[in-house]
Image 1 (cartoon, helix red, strand yellow):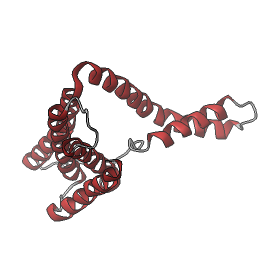
Image 2 (image 1 turned 90 degrees about the horizontal axis):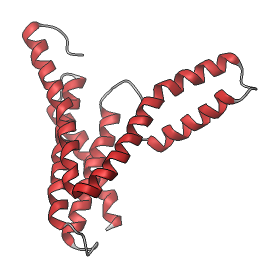
Image 3 (image 1 turned 45 degrees about the vertical axis):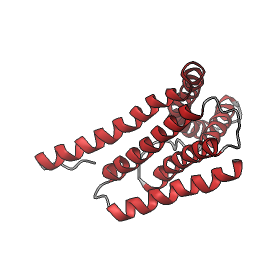
Image 4 (image 1 turned 180 degrees about the vertical axis):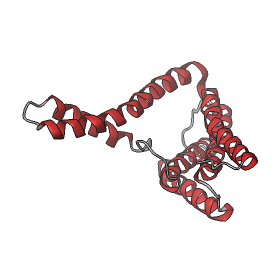
Length: 184
């Protein structure tokens, strides 16, 4: 089963790239909208299949493998999104690297040997990364607690959370077309 995760992840990346090339979104927000919807659909499928196979007694059964592959494909879409759609901020798919950098920055800031100018640059970088890291940690804690209490149904909230920016991006496009303002 674990060997199937990589091809499923790659399939999510491929689908994302091919889909954006085929629909040729006119703006970054439209491209983001498309990928949010694809990821939400995959997350919903992951949720529904997960509910059906729970409790997963046989990890190598076909339904459990399919469930894992759908989840890995959704992760592929999320990772492709960060590469295919320009956006500001800290990447949210390389959290181990972000946490490592934050720890190193904290050590540097606390070091008395660090020059003042370098400390200011490091503090600025840490300030940009910290909200993303804290949100990631809160999401991991919340996700763990939600799964313990609701099982795979806990994925319904992330599905809605993915559809919200898609709807927001889509409504922003309609607003800008109606009133002739750029949506980015």
